[in-house]
Image (cartoon, rainbow, N blue to C red; front, side, top):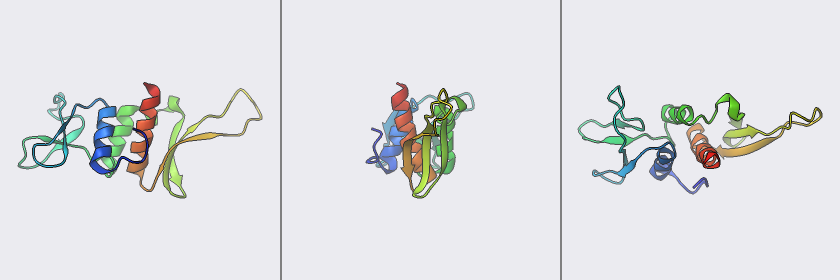
Amino acid sequence: MNDHTLIGRELDAAVARALGCNVEASRHGESYVCGCPQNADNEYPHGFFVDGIDTCELAHYSTDFDAAWRAVEASGLLAPDTQNSLHGHVDGWAVTKDVTDYEDYYASACHETLAVAPTMPLAVCYALLKFLEKKS
């Protein structure tokens, strides 16, 4: 599931599922909706209401910066204890994990690449799937 073959709404659905969402197929086309109960603020945790439609469309994690960042916060992907970082890369954006052996004084910094993608939301989505897969 963590490979780069998932794109578009399929990737969004995979991210939402990884975050614990009960993803459902939309009755109004080839999309997905958040099937989770509403929270205390009367909002769905993984989506948004669309005018004139009585369902909650799944967030666009792979293309929307705000949605991608909400996924980062919900998953703990960039929490300090993970030693993961998001940064610019020659190919766009990268999420890496610092795997330096701090016990060895002479060790050079070493990074494990979780994901590289042309946009920040894509890099976050691919890294998040890999990160949560490793956690489980």
